[in-house]
Length: 407
Image (cartoon, rainbow, N blue to C red):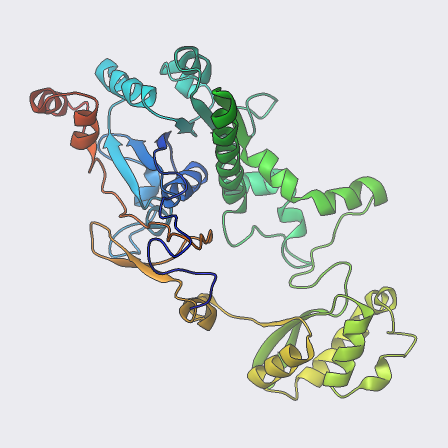
């Protein structure tokens, strides 16, 4: 274990309190974007109450049954939360959620535009009574504009934003292999919430925050967008290559492939020495990155012919020793078995209804306290406890359940 990680709660530095201890979050959430933000809040120590529909809950619960019968997305995104199953169409259900929000610090929602306002849970209405509340509205395309009411799944936003146009091969545009637009929005929601909590600590005033998947993705497209605006140049799809750097791609080895990325002309000189072709370092056709990019096909063939003589592991070691940026082209099993995870003690077990599952520790590493990785909740698992915390008696909860208002 390195100094970057800790395995116990608390160290000699003297602090064993989680960063968001004492913060309560209520989230009316579905799918990926909002659940990702609130899961990280739970990782950081906040109490997160996830409000779900009676009967079926967050529809991500049913995406698949890959993890001991549970959905992989749901297991990934919902550990450490409490599940309250409630019918928001029933006045008693809305009253319960309003009471819960009244005692919360943060309310997050990613329902369709206008849905929370129709439920009486709009930001203006909530904050009129609770000035200190932080409300985060997450959407696909924002609260205004011609696409405000459009369906906004991750693939659709990747396409509308132009992300797909720069992703893939020269022949085929593709979406990214992970839900990039969802994740981008979730991370901006997380950052916004933390900033709003810090401001509220200074001023006592909460916030209303709007985060859209489209805006978050557009922000991540800043580099190619500037090229388009100021050079009138669409970044081409390059597969694993780089539009502005050469050599920068995958190259064959005797037993597979390896990725090499040379960032500057010094790196090119070093690479030619490692691959046994030092005469190319000063060859005017290849000596500068501008020339190499202009002759990308020639450069890739020269490098590929040389790398083919080595086994992947041997070449990886040689390149690393020489300081040449390189990486093995691993699959998901390669990630799971990666020594960078195992040797740094990055794996833990998380409890679920179906039994313990493996999970990677949160990427935020506090040296004085290990962040918790709480259980993945069953649908409505915490309904009774949450309602009891609002002052309802066992008889009242039983009556709500018999009426189908809670589950």
